[in-house]
Image 1 (cartoon, helix red, strand yellow):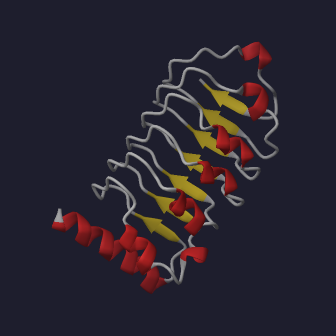
Image 2: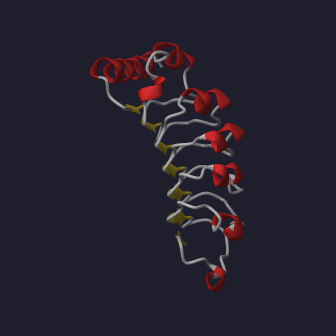
Length: 167
């Protein structure tokens, strides 16, 4: 456990010291986003554009995460145990790419459809059974939705042409 905490601290410090716009906390054995990171990065959260929390054991993200990192463009949450996303995800004005592959989602996170800047949504390898294709077709920037390896049936004849659904 102490080693995992030290790894997170090193990565946060490196991000801040080097003035990076990305934070990589993948493979850190996290079960949640550490409160200490909010405190440590308080002065530079607005400059962070990419965060990877891939391959941890995260069960839930708080609204505070999305309200703190408001300038995110890319978010990688693949390989966790998320069952849902908080409502605050819908307020992400700059998010272009979100990867929620290989989690435990059973329903498409509807608030993602409020993110007008989203171009790519990856939900591969979850347990989603239904896809709101009509609502997705109203998203102005959307290019791809990856729902491979989910137990859903998509009628390809009703798919809009402005984006691609990978099934």
